[in-house]
Image 1 (cartoon, helix red, strand yellow):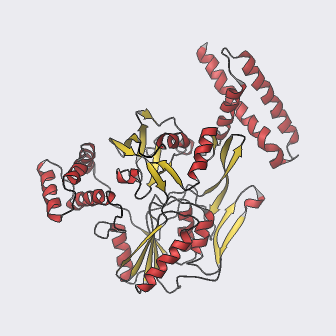
Image 2: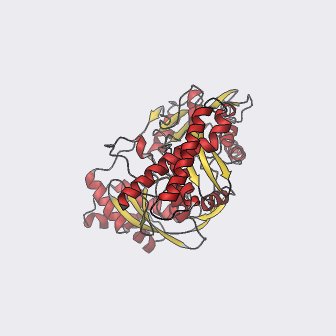
Image 3: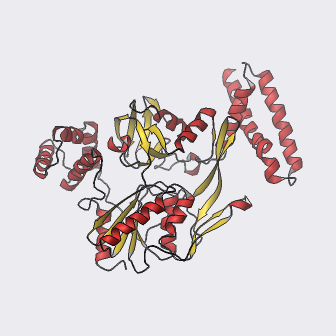
Length: 468
């Protein structure tokens, strides 16, 4: 009986969810076009709502029945970016938009299982790290783009929404949270992270010889101002070309990326949005006033952690012929969400998709680079070595014992690992050691030309004249 009741309850909640969207939104959106059908569904929803509440074997409040229905409503969209927000979740979202909050500093996403084939070996039902915020506690703890958070304080994240995961990761600065990381294919280890006040960074800059190197970390209302400051810095150092690094940049504000793109492009389309809502069908243009001269060779570096606004920028530069795109195909998050309060609760709803100047849809596709640079994956044997290094914290322990980085000491460490049977390439071990030292710095180097192969290739393309 209990199983049957539960099944009936679930079925009715799901059906109620469908009716509820019509009850709440159909009127203003569809007017009288489908009025009879809407009224029919509203009547059915009203009947089922009352029937379940009055006849279900256990007492259930109208509020609980409503909450279950409306959550099912958004889940039925099969869109990880469209979710119903409880009052607690809505308050957390409001706190996040202030620009400062207590947390660990991660951008995360959760794939839509219905968008993957049942035999899709790449799908995992956990929250995935799009990118750690540079300098944040999670970044310093060694959490990487592509990692999966499979547990938080021992609780599986398989059934949790993104917002529920955020709720558990946020907290009072100074408190700790333990997350269990899965790094594909089967490396599992715990990371203890101390929460802190998270401030979203914007850009970092430096020179690579005569090349201006600009890393855009986030797209905020101040990004275009910071880019102008960077270009002033490049000009003082007689730059002859520019690299814009968007790797690991998960996106930000639409207006911010349009304003920033305007600094690089002459008059023309930057991005367009398409929606069922007429007011959201918008074409965003750049003006004829540019900051970076068109004769300055330009490259844009991207990877699978480049998402949303970063894909708008890369797509505009590629379609308009302003820059050569180098790296991996981007994340593929090309949708626009409304965040709306609804009483004490609220919701996020996808209402439009982004399109590049030539009309390419970004969502679930991404931007394909002009020059694809895919890093050589680890072999199965190398993954076993990496698994041992991470699970036994060998890199962290070494850096703990040797707080000052010295090439000779690192060489001795590599030799000791080889004696223990860990046969990763020298450059891979040295790169892991360098990353660990950099994570512990308040102001780590802006770039790492020694171990960053994509950057090496991009610099070579500029210096050889391949990018001009």
